[in-house]
Image 1 (cartoon, rainbow, N blue to C red):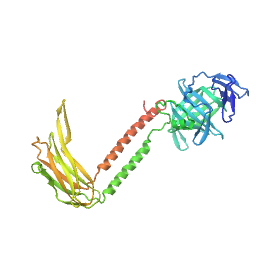
Image 2: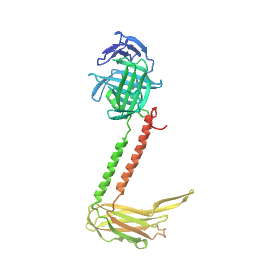
Image 3: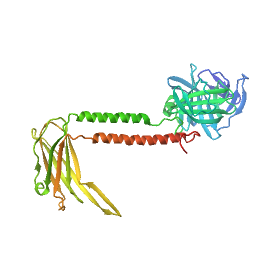
Amino acid sequence: MEVTCIKCKHITTLPLEITLVDFACPNCSTHSSYKKNPNGEIIKHFDYGYDRKIGLNVGQSGELYGVQYTVTGMLIKRVAGTYYWKEFILDGANGERAFLSESNGHWIFLQEEQTEYDVSDLPEKVDYQGSIFKLYGNEKTTLAYAEGVFDYALPRNYQTMTEYINPPYILSFERDEEGQTLFVGKHIPWRTVEKAFKISWMPDRGGVGVVQPGMVNFINTVLIFAITALLLIFSHIFIYRDKVQESLLIDRLPFSTYGQKPYVSQSFEVTEAASTLLIELNADVNNSWAYVDVGLVNETTGAEEYAGKDIEYYHGYEGGENWSEGDSNAEMNLCGVAPGRYHLVLTPQKDSSDLITTVVNISVTRNPPSKRNVIIPILFMALAAFGIYKWAGYHERKRWEDSDYSPFDE
C-alpha cells in the first residue's frame, strides 16, 4: 500500500495492506488522522528530533520466530519528559502483529494478549499463567514522536503504563480512557534483531535492561555444581573402593651416609594397574635447602623413571615484619605405575654450608586416597558459585535502580 502525506506529499510504501486510521509522515513528522475524514486531517506536528541512525525504519522487513514481519510504525514514548524509548510495530502478511521495544540498547519482543486482570490498584505481584511477576513501574506516558501507518488512533493524551517483570519476561499494562491493553514480552538479544532486519548500526547498550537475563543463571549453575560435586565424590569412592593402601617405606637417610652414594630400597610388588606412589619428605632445613633425587626402577623391564623434589625453608625479619617462605615438608606423586616388581633409588643433597641439617626422613605409600582431586574442584566450584551469586546480586540491583518498587534497601 501507499500513503501520501497531505502536507509534504511524501509517499510511504508498505508491502502489505493496513487499515488506515492514523498516519505519521517519516519525512515531515506530520501526524494526520483518517478516522473521520477519508482525505485526512492534520492533527499535529511532532517536534521531537528523532535520530534515524538506528537503521530500523518503516517499510523494513525481517523474520523473527518464524514469521516475516514488516515495520509498519514506530513510536517514541516518554516518561516525565526525560526518559524516552522506542516501540516498533511489526505486522505479518497473515495478520500477525508484534512489537519491538528498545531502551538503552536493550530489546523486548512483545505481543498483545487478552486479559481481564485489573492492576489499577497496583498489586505488588501478579500471577500470570503460573508465574509470579513483580511490580516494576507505574508511570504516566506521552507520545513524543511517531511515524508510519496505524490502524488505530494514536494516543492524544496521557496513558498509564504499569509493568511487572519476571526476567526475561515482562507484562506491560497500558490504560487510558479507551480501556486496558496487556502486552506480554520477553527479552530478545540485540544480535537477533540486528540479524533479522539486517541493521547496519545498533544503539549502544547501557546499564541492565528491565528484563535482561544475567549471563549465568545462578540457580541452574548451583544445581550443576552440586551434581558435579556428587559425581566427583562417588567417582572417588568408586575408583578407590578396590585400591589397597600400603606403606612401602619409612626410613631416615643421613647425609653423612647417603650424601655420597644412593639409597636403594627393598623391592616391592605393584599388582594393580595405574597405581600411585606418594613420597613424603622432611628435613630440618632452616634458611637452607635440601634436595632428593628419586628413581623408580622396574626390576622386570629395567625401565627407570626419575624425578626430584626440593625442600626449602627461609625466614627472616625485614621492614618491621616477619616473613617466611617454603616448608620443611614436601611431597610428590608418581602416578600411573604399572604392575610389576620395583625398587626406589634415592639420592639426597643439601646446601654445603648447612651444618645443622643431618637427615632426610622419607615415607613412601602406595595408593593413598587422593582427596585433593575431589576437594580442589569442589572448592573451585564453591568459589565460582559465590562469585556468580555476588554478580547476580549486582545485576539485579542495577536492574531495579530506576524503579520506585525496588526490593533492595536504598
